[in-house]
Length: 56
Image (cartoon, rainbow, N blue to C red; front, top):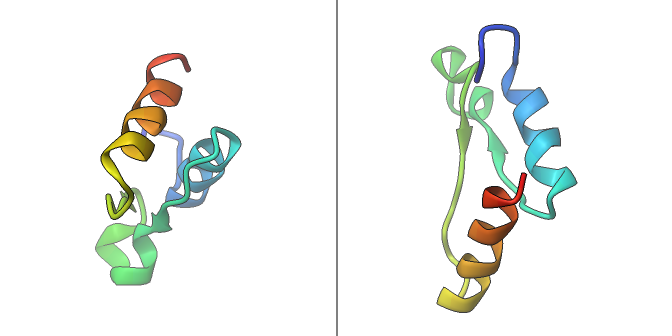
C-alpha cells in the first residue's frame, strides 16, 4: 500500500479491475497495509488479470 492506503483501499482498487484479493488484516495486525492474492485461476485468466493491472 502507498503511504495513505489501507488494505481495504487496495481491495477496492483491485475489485474495480475485476480482481478479487483478500485484505491483509485477515492474517493479523501486520497485514493492515497489504493484500493477499491467490493465483488459482487458469494461466489464461491470470494473463487477463495481468493485462488489467498493466492498463491501470
